Image 1 (cartoon, rainbow, N blue to C red):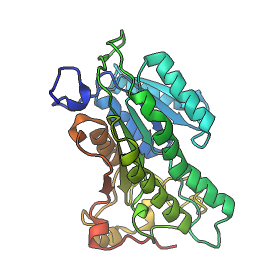
Image 2 (tube, rainbow, N blue to C red):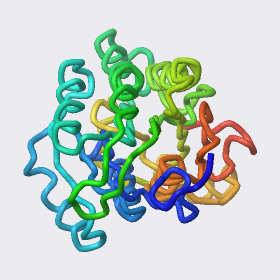
Image 3 (cartoon, rainbow, N blue to C red):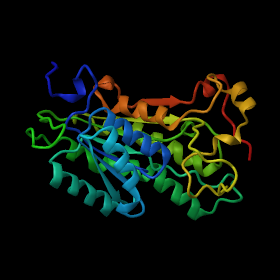
Length: 298
């Protein structure tokens, strides 16, 4: 396949001109970092999806408008576990833009830290957030991603004359081993990676890629004081669960990661820099899982 000036997945500079993106978990620190990164790559539009109302995204939208004025960010109230809302979102995207290029599932749920504290309802909610949402993306986003469009009249516009797309699932290092938190988190994270691995064969011939990002300790700006240990409102454990001394001892880079460092991997997987990458699990943990399994004290 040869390069063209506008065929974004194969642009030498990795820009996402013309791209229309969906990011779930947009009220979480990692989701917001991913939105900023896609905007920095030149995406035409990013749907910032999460629970709540459209007014909850005002600060994010205003901030990105200053940083990346040609990228339109749309706050979109969204239930990740509702099939009808997934279909409705895709319809809205296609009716407004005629294309869909990137879908990022960053809506994971931590869940309780022990099996004694975990109810069947808790486990179901974790599976809905961590693996059902990626399943809906795999099932319904690719037909929209294969639609082609001419260049339209909006900032950062570009034509789309070939079928392509990228589905990105943000999971956790708990996708490959246990001990990171509670059993529900490990089980649901394994299932999220399972969606990605199953998706490679599902997507054959579509031009759509699917990959996983598995972060380790990420400092999302939450400390233990006031943290809900049931984990039913958090995506990752507080980085402060590991002391600075423990981080230096058990993490290769001797610190917790930042949301933007996950966001940059998402930007890579959305762009042409990863045009031959699908089915991968990109571990973003500062080398902790290579040195020894990351365990979080309960």
